[in-house]
Length: 192
Ligand code: GLN
Image 1 (tube, rainbow, N blue to C red):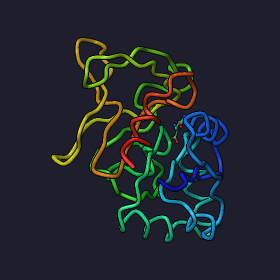
Image 2: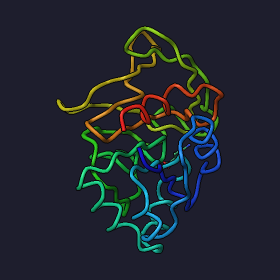
Image 3: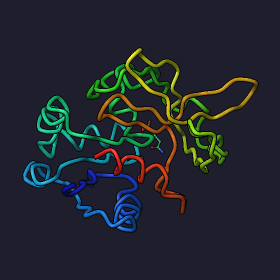
């Protein structure tokens, strides 16, 4: 495995770099098309999806990232990063664009706004539990047929997909980089 880039335009970049580094992965910041070229996989961090989308354009990264995704580069998007990957975004800004690389429909701030940020245990497919930190999180409403659900959050008598994967494209509605638990990053890195 080569290096994993973390898109470093806005959001919780340092936390992703720290988690990847703790796992022994060569993790680098990606701010330019040149830096993108040097990495084998990419993490799109949490933050503010409209701000990151805007900065992707001004950094000249929108098309290069789109091209790498189309070519099958592995990617993990967390929270705002998931929104940037989703095929359908509800309650987005009118001019909000995304890469449409993951066949899911998400609702921005789908668990409520800042006041509704919360922590809850999540259940992985093997029955084990990981901590989930949700901050103005998108809610995954629908998954396409090619999407595998890797973790769920049970609440209100139902359960939501919160970690999903469609081949090399991974998305989490929560923030695995904000806890000491490295399971999600380990699973992603293990797939490379
Ligand atoms: N609500 C934010 C957005 O729409 C995402 C929040 C987050 O990444 N913590 O971009």
